[in-house]
Amino acid sequence: MSRRFPAVVLAAAVTIALAGCAKHAGIVAPTFKDPVVFDDSFGAYVDFQAFLGSKVDAIAIDSTEAYSGTASIRVTVPPAGDPSGTYAGGAFTSSRARDLTGYDALTFWAKSSRNVTFDIVGIGNDNTGTSRYTASRSSLAMTSAWKRFVVPIPLASRLRDEKGLFYFAEGPEAGQGATVWFDEIRFEKLLTVTDPRPAIPTKTLTPDVGSYFDVSGTKVTFAVDGADVTVDCMQGYFTFASSADSVVRGGEGTLFAAGLGLATVTASLGGVAAAGTLTVTPNAAPQSPAPTPTVPAANVISLFSNAYTNVPVDTWSASWDLADLTDLQIAGNDVKRYSNLTYAGIEFITHEIDATAMTHFHLDVWIPHGTSFKVKLVDFGADGVYGGGDDTSSELTFTSATTPAVTLGTWCSLEIPLTSFTSTGLASRSHLAQLLLSGDPGTAYIDNVYFHD
Image (cartoon, rainbow, N blue to C red):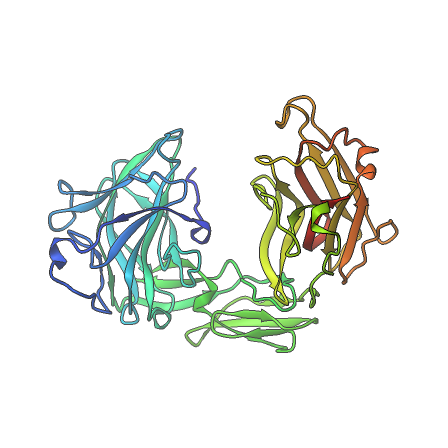
């Protein structure tokens, strides 16, 4: 089975400059409507950026294979277990933004050394993590014969200043790699891309009040030369309307949770109504920061607080946890928000903490709903490694009836004696390496995480 690569989460690992080759020699600045990504050479100001974890040397210009002209782009997809990368993927970006409003599609020709179902190709990914207009096709059948592919642009009027020209990702299939060639990658005005049928998912969302929020699963189906082609795209192409602006404010590509209540959100794409309806019931969120700690800095080992100098933390959301982490500010104060929280893993393995001289663990938490919030400390023992046989841990549960208590809709200062952990399983606190947060709040705001005496 082919591997899937969501475009919005891929990150840059390396940049390979491939700009301004022979066909465009002498161009000082790109034409704003330049359609060329690659013909026999790369369009002006075009760079290739390999995605994180991909085979960084996966692409090359091949002068022995071409659909038209003298060269193509050769992509080497690694087999399973290849140490050079787990897949081939990257983005062709332009250092000078292009106006793509005059086109309705990206087109290219492709073939493969063996039959593959190519994972994803698309437009609008500038590989900065801030792309608003990605659009892609998935599961493209490629064979050893050259074939033309079309990626319709959902709404070209949004692409007046676009640097993300073309991106792709393909992993091993049945453990095998492949060689794929691309040629004649360009934007076109086809006039055969018709009958747009936009859609948003029908589902319920619970964003936090005061936050912009995203909708996944937006797409549009076109008739391309009479055959349906579905493009998965970002919400930036859509215009949203709300039944209650006091609850949700909609706009061009944006949704904002304005207040508590319920709103029905619909969407359109270039004036065409989209199928699907969102039901949005925002969560309450803190409107003021947590109390400023007053413990003297000399008595504190701080993991996270604006009041102290923090010790190094490897991660605030480990790869194995089930939570989405957002760093934000409330009235200028840094806060961490965990959403979709089942359990969050905070690790400081590289710099384990010796809290033997400390008497308390402190954490400020704000939750909008739920009945319990759990805090777990893990000590890796004298060997300093996970699973070495001397690991110990303890998890404490806090509710509205415990001391300290957790109350919904307000900052709660959990001032926890470390003896509460050591009396329930934590045999040592000289090699603390993990902190786990869990429970049933769904969303939790965290601040002022520290040990003190």
